[in-house]
Amino acid sequence: MIYLVDSNIFIYASNAASDDEKSYQLLAGLGFFYFASVTRIEVLGYQELDSEDKKIIESMFTKGKEIQLSKGVKEKAIELRQKRKMSLGDSIIAASALVHNAILVTRNVDDFSSIDSLQLFNPYAL
Image 1 (tube, one colour):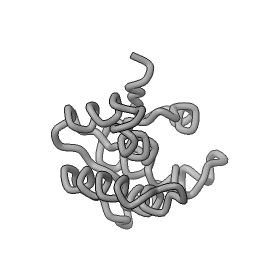
Image 2 (cartoon, helix red, strand yellow; image 1 turned 30 degrees about the horizontal axis):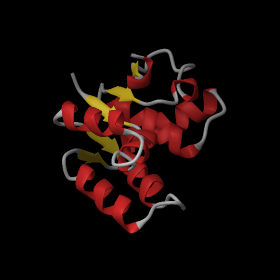
Image 3 (cartoon, one colour; image 1 turned 135 degrees about the vertical axis):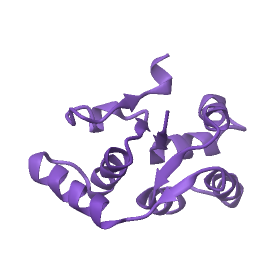
C-alpha cells in the first residue's frame, strides 16, 4: 500500500510529546510514505509552530518522499476544483494521491469524501 499523508497528520504528530502520540506513532509505523509539496508549505507555515515542533516535522519529512507539483498533479487538481468547491491545498493533496494511486491519510475525511475515486484512511476512526 502507498500512503500520502495529509498536512493535519503532520501538525498533530508534531505535538506528540504533549497530546497526540497517535499521529506520531502512525507516521513511524507507516515506514515509507508520500506527502504533497503543498503539505510542506502548509505545515511549516502553520502560525503556531514553534522551533521544537518545526524540528520534529522536518525530521518526519525526511522519512517520506515529497511529491512535486507535476503537470499531471496540476491537471488533476484543476479538474477536482472544477467539479467541487475545495481549497487549493486540498485539491493539490487529493490530486497528488490520485495521480500516484495512494491512500490519503487524513483526519479531515469530510474535506475529501466527495471525491469518489480517492481512497481515505482516518487513523482516528479506529
